Length: 315
Image (cartoon, rainbow, N blue to C red; front, side, top):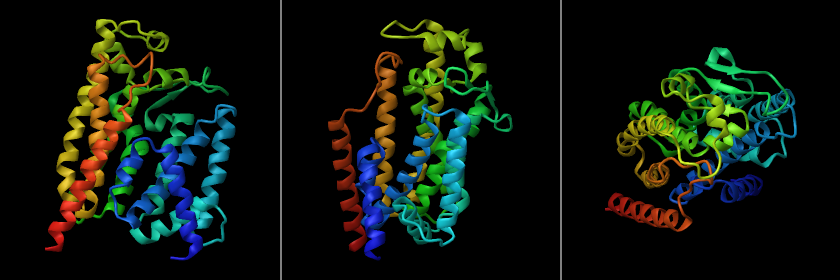
């Protein structure tokens, strides 16, 4: 690996270390080459998210900026010279781990869905130039699932290519594990998303539990949730729990040197869901998090798991 590529990977790792509040703990349990590749993928996703969330710009300008950035990546992936460290590292990771450009494009498409909510993907959008006038909603859970697929399941499909697997069942299980993670994020971020004009809880579920978009958007502070509001949140948490079972089946299908990393990630996210549930879904006053020391303890257990797996293989 050239020093230029090594420097690019180092830049991506710095981004992941600073921004990846949950993912970076899992990255630490990976072998060096795989950890570097995961940091490159994360840095790529992070920039796409930052472009999509830049509320200083109207949605249309954000979409144009993302399209220009994606075209720049396509040229870099095709071999054109670039001084973009993320592109340099990602191109190397893509070649090392056979990550298709289509999957990486889908990662970016998922972030674009927050700005367009195209009807073909189940979204409904009130066009406008700001979060206040641009309301993104999903009618059914099937519609939401498709959104979650692009923003989270595709991440899982990229990850398992870096982790390594031989059994094709791993792809469906990675897709479902991604759904579990994204549903957890949606529950945690209900208030913040609503402030940005994004209601990810399916409209059918809101109607079934007699909760309006306006009511959900107006919940503030420590106001206790109504019985209907809590039932709505419980429904989405139950769905997430059901999808977390896929992770249990996925773990043994992943290459032994990467299982600990996946275990760390699944454990942190499932603990996050537990904390949301234990706080009676009170996510409207402050952001629910897994404490740093708890994540460090999970990482230490993961590193011990990785050590044992390596020791077993060496015998």
